[in-house]
Image (tube, rainbow, N blue to C red):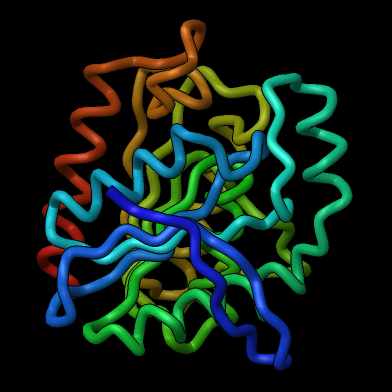
Length: 220
């Protein structure tokens, strides 16, 4: 449904990404990849948003590199300039979508979930965020500074975004008076990714999509 495009960054450079469109009068979503890269699964999420009536742009944060190996994915994620990705790639994607028309939200998974909260803090074009099982370092994106509606989806069987870490995030958001809600699922990290034989949980994925759809409809 979509295609690869090139879009401008605020610093005058350019980035590439996968764009799926629903129409000039529709709201838009920046879709942020997992640590695997901009693969077919993430492009499929963008297509799904387009079918649901949203323009969707998934920036290629690894510049064409994609992997299925956890060690290589960890290496790629560790080498990512998170500040540059947030302030340049994600903000550039949000500005590009603004040019199509309508408000802009952001959704991300795993590494992209962390960047979703970062975008909710640092990218002024973003009006709503949906985070899947990702929490950024507080020194980079303090949840107390989230100024837009934020919905989060976390797995109870997760050794990265542990239940304890989610409790801390929840407490910080509540203490700041953020407009945020957190949902937890009896599933494993990555439960939304239908290509993961080990972690995909259809019931949790479908419930989270419905909750997200309702949340976006109420906040766009």
